Structures are given as structure tokens and as C-alpha cells.
Length: 53
Image 1 (cartoon, one colour):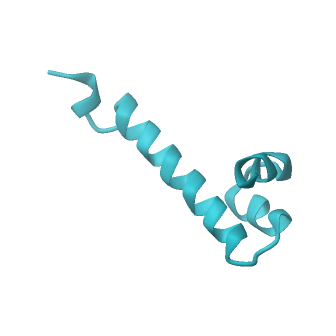
Image 2 (cartoon, one colour; image 1 turned 180 degrees about the horizontal axis):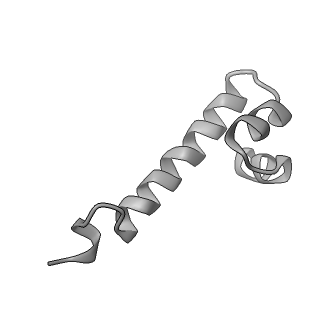
């Protein structure tokens, strides 16, 4: 059995992280401030800034 097929496996986790990153970028591109988005998602404003660039 592959680890990736188990719930919480490495691939599933990286898929969730990628989806979260896309949601953060989409929120900023829709007009919300980086500060607001960072606070909502629990990441630093510098992280949001780097991902949106």
C-alpha cells in the first residue's frame, strides 16, 4: 500500500497546501488587502506578498 493513498499522506497534504496557497492568492487578486488575507489564513503578510508576486 502506498503512503500517498492513505488519508493525510504526503501527496494529500501537499495538495491541500497548494489549494490553500491558490485560495490566498485568489483572495488578494479579488481586491482584498494582503494584511486582511494574511490574518484570515494565519500566515504572515510577507508570505502573502511573496506568493502574490
